[in-house]
Image: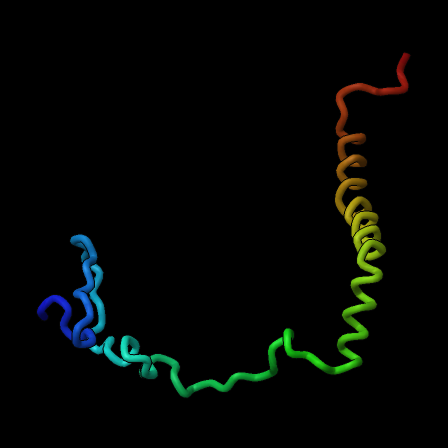
Length: 104
């Protein structure tokens, strides 16, 4: 195929600098603003909506409550993290130590 084959008329040829990457010849719909075909096109439907556009009062109230209690949640996470990871490690290293700390 010739360089720039399939490109929109008047578009500069695509230079890849000697790369061995192969490009599809039918790239003109994208260049012209059309819709690309193939792949998973038309095999799925978008579910749900964007969180930025939420106007539901219940959802907004729940998010506001979460933001108000965020510091509390971080504190609880910290305590659980220490209890789940730090305390068992300290206990393990206490049992496998080389010398008795109570020996005088």
